[in-house]
Image 1: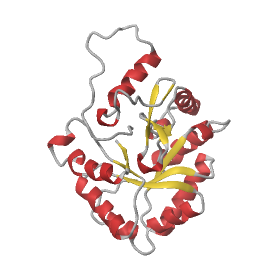
Image 2 (image 1 turned 90 degrees about the vertical axis):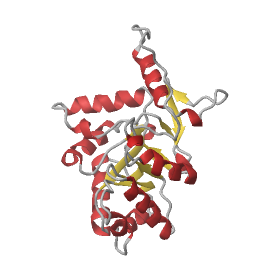
Image 3 (image 1 turned 180 degrees about the vertical axis):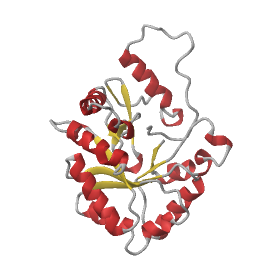
Image 4 (image 1 turned 60 degrees about the horizontal axis):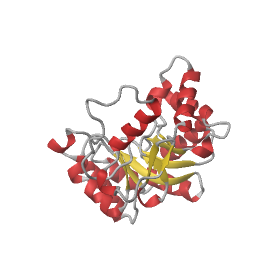
Length: 253
């Protein structure tokens, strides 16, 4: 997962790169290749930690690593201890953006991440998870379950997962919809920021943003697929990214 803005990806590694490059140097080069050049000038280098560049996540003002640690596969290791070591090593090496979801591996991904965030690691992480509930009751129940599994009293970014149906925006923003639970949770201090994700249609993303605007709501972050093929068909980059950057919404790719 990458935090970015719109512009071409810089070419930072040639075919003749030094084979003796260290793991940390490689991580820095990889992160640099994912930075969007339009937001960083030569005179204003990004803030870094252990060689990992950080970006400001939209209008939130939060500094997050340009590379995030995805949560799904963390629930697949046969040894849960390996998952914990992966998370803690990532944080130790400068990654602070952690991804997860209420339904990943039946909750096992969140459970393992919660264990990894003990012993002071929670304070070093920007923690994101996602929920599937479209009505208020389901959304609130899933959020509370995520808080329990993650062993925390506050999630930094809660996102509505897989907004891929044309009916999803209206269901989430309806009276008694999931957004009511999210807003109440934010007021109660259970979450800090609210976003949504989807991997199907940029038009549904635009409808979600328009529905939010109609209800006087502004998202803090939006997640979508961005890759070298995206620009050629039904493009998130061409349709959605300009709207987000114009409105200062954090972009996760």
